[in-house]
Image (cartoon, one colour):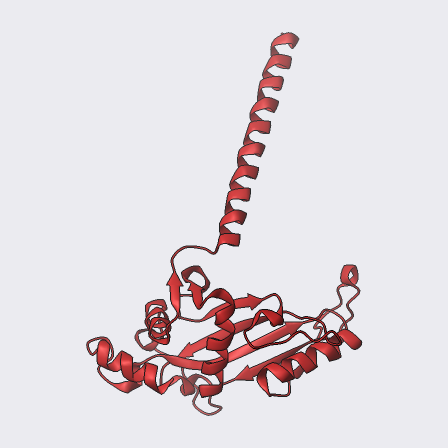
Amino acid sequence: MKEVIQKLLEKYPDRYPNPMLVPRIHSVVINCSVGQSGDPLEKAKKILEELTGRKPKLVRAKRTIKPFGIHKNQPIGWVITLRGEEAFNFLKRVLAVYDYTVWESSIDKYGNFAFGIDEHIKIPGVRYDPELGTTGFDVCVSMERAGYRVKRRRLRRAKIPEKHRVKREDTILFLEEMGIKVEKGPRRIERLTIIAQEMRRAELAKREEKKEEERGKKAKKGK
C-alpha cells in the first residue's frame, strides 16, 4: 500500500500536496452469513480461517425471523476485520475473481465500496475441499485519510470536515494505481435487473390502459 500512496503523491501533486491527504484502506471487513447454526457454521469458520489466517468473530441474529427459522441471539455467521497491508493484499487477491475490476456504482460518495464472492473456490489458489464445501461472503472496504481517528476516540470526539473526507474520485485513483479497473455504470447483473424492472413497469402500464378502456366502454353502455 505504501507504493500506491507514493505513486499518488508523485502523479497528483496538486490534489495531494502532502501525504496526510492521500486516501488509504482503513479496513476490509469480511462478512459471512450462513443463516443457520451447527455444522454449516463451523465449516464456514474453517474456510474463513484458511483464507485469512485470522480467527473470525461470531455473529448472532439481532431479532427473530420466523419465515427463515432464525431466532434472536442464534449464531448465524462470522465476521473478520483486516487492516493495513493485510487488508490491501487480501483485497487484491479476491478482486482477481472479477478480473481486477470494481464497478463505479458500488462506490459510495465517501469512497467506501463493497462486493460479494458467491463461492470462495473462485479465488485463485484456493482448492475445493469436499469436507468443507463452498461458502460465499461479502467484502466491505472502508477508505480513510490520516486524521479520521478523531471521530472514533473516546474523549473529545469530533466530526470529520467535509473537505477532508475521502471522495469517490479519490478511491477511483487509488484503485487505478493498484492496477484495478474501475468500470462505469452498474454491473451486468444490475443492468439486467434494471431492464427487468423497466419491462415490468411497461407491462403494468399496458394493463392499466386496458382497464381504462374497459371502464370507458362500460360507462358508454350504461348511458
